Amino acid sequence: MSSALRSVLRQSRRSPFARQARLASTSAKQVSLKDRVAELIPAEIENVKATRAEHGKKTFGPVLVDQLYGGMRGMPALIWDGSVLDAEEGIRFRGKTIPECQELLPKAPGGSEPLPEALFWLLLTGEAPTQEQVTALSRDWAARAAIPEFVEELLDRCPPTLHPMSQFSLAVTALNHDSAFAKAYAEGIPKKEYWKPVFEDCMDLIAKLPNIAGRIYRNVYGQGKLPTIDLERDYSWNLSTLLGFGDNANFVELMRLYLTIHSDHEGGNVSAHTGKLVGSALSDPFLAFGASLNGLAGPLHGLANQEVLLWLRKMQSKIGENASDEAVREYVWSTLQGGQVVPGYGHAVLRKTDPRYTAQREFALKHLPNDPLFKLVGQVYQIVPDILLAAGKAKNPWPNVDAHSGVLLTHYGLTQMQFYTVLFGVSRAFGVAAQLIWDRALGAPLERPKSYSTAAIQKMFKDKQ
Ligand code: CMX
Image 1 (cartoon, protein in one colour):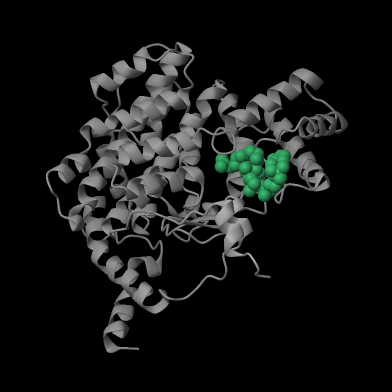
Image 2: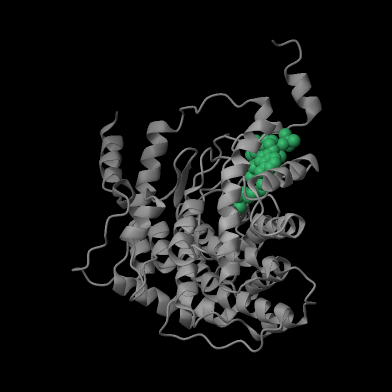
């Protein structure tokens, strides 16, 4: 190993990401998030250089033709720093499990769930922020929360029959009108500076989502005029208030948990990967995340939380409330026999119960143990995995995040299922935004994998064993 490489490796071991989520120093001056990212970038550039120098020519193993036809399952393809998903254990945000984040991250006064602001800081820096840093971030987002008048009008003109996710994507895409990155790029900003306006766009994006989500909710479901953002309150309180649930402290706590656990699920899922892909063309964060939302709106991905509630309601109307296990079993089989999937069950990577499901179940046990729909969700959990195993197709018979979120929202009176994926989208912006900032800081290139036709595959392997 050359001495230059040794020195780069030594430096990279000092990278904050090698140490993962330690508590930020409270004694030091209160650094802002942007300043902290700026401090981290030089070491991380060296860290990536060192990793590529040491491992760049190593292989992950063969790529199978089946993977090209099979949705690229398990094919190593992307760098994604905010979180890593283990098939058995589930998600870790910068090395921390959900229970560890619940323990480690700052909370609201009197609250017990982590503040999503803190999770964003963790995703972006690998460090847990101080309470003061989180408060500063809440204030910064609240100050950026207003949306342009033309976006308000755009939303107001949407027919209430247009799905809330389509409205959401439309509004986010339209925010590109004021993109700092698009403007800076047009003015010729050098590449090493890209991350700075991208950071500003990402902060604006996250900050404006509650006003967009609140406006869609109130427009579509006739819930009256949108209140204004309170500059002194946290993101989840403001979002809950815009939706009309700010008075309910437990709903606000639910939002804190919900936004934290839905934020990121490594890079390969449709919404995360789409955001990264579109961002790689140097489309600004609003265009990139608008594309993410269109992917999240699919029933095999984020829309599944709406589908779960619809499915549970249909089940109740068919077999009644407090139905026997046998009746639930029959209903699950009839779903499969009808050629449909059981929504909320299965996963492309996970092979065990999703810890995001477990976190929501624990919240329900604490706050709504006697809710009839929660009991049904628990009953379904006892029944579906055995049936999926017996049916023999699904590789993972266990529940995912979407199996549980709808019942919690319904309990507090947010019963409009078509809106659920919008909340998933608000949260997913955190993970995508963190990666977009790092992609531009590290000069990630345009994504351009190689595709093949079936004829080309046949030709390539003709006469080969
Ligand atoms: N019910 C019925 N069949 C299922 C199933 C389920 N919950 N999960 C998987 N299967 C079927 C698949 O449809 C597939 O059938 P075909 O071979 O006929 O196409 C077979 O089992 C093998 O699929 P798999 O390899 O186990 O799963 P995939 O990686 O292809 O798909 C997922 C993963 C999530 C799309 C799938 O499990 C599913 O459709 N689940 C229900 C929808 C859902 O809950 N989606 C939300 C996921 C989390 C999120 O992104 O929000």
